[in-house]
Length: 227
Image (cartoon, rainbow, N blue to C red):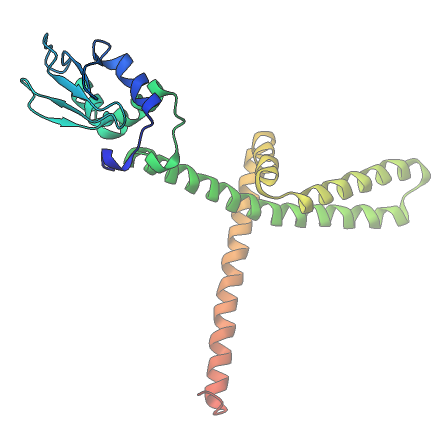
């Protein structure tokens, strides 16, 4: 991202050079002049435009640039680190539009981890709901044959499983991922087994779907209905 693509207000320019080149002052003309800190100069050979922050050293440096160029020349840092330092000095919030390649790569890795966590959570929920339904079915059957002493406990189990089912069905996004992580902490072996079972079921379902589509295509061709 070129320095020229980032614009600074006069107040931001003033704040930056007050921190990085405090001896640069308003001269007789429209430009600020002062010793150039880039080469440790003592004479006022550095010129700064207070409206844009553009600078030029008429002495040993023999070059110029913008605000971020000055930070890069002064510190030896790369563009993105220099841009971040300039923003810190002038008090401007950073934004995603100025992320470095490493930061963008880290964001992509984080996003992929989050996507994977959601996928695993969905697989776990599918199998957990199946287990809850099986538990509810067993508890409901027991209600018909239980004695009075057991009815209260079985009724409590039914209410607990029903509540669990509603919680699983209503969860989405971060809430579902949180439930999945709680399950991993509570019983990691069972939770992993449920995820693996869910993945197998999903793969089997996809294979069946492909097989059905192929069967339909073959039947269509056999009946002469294809285009």
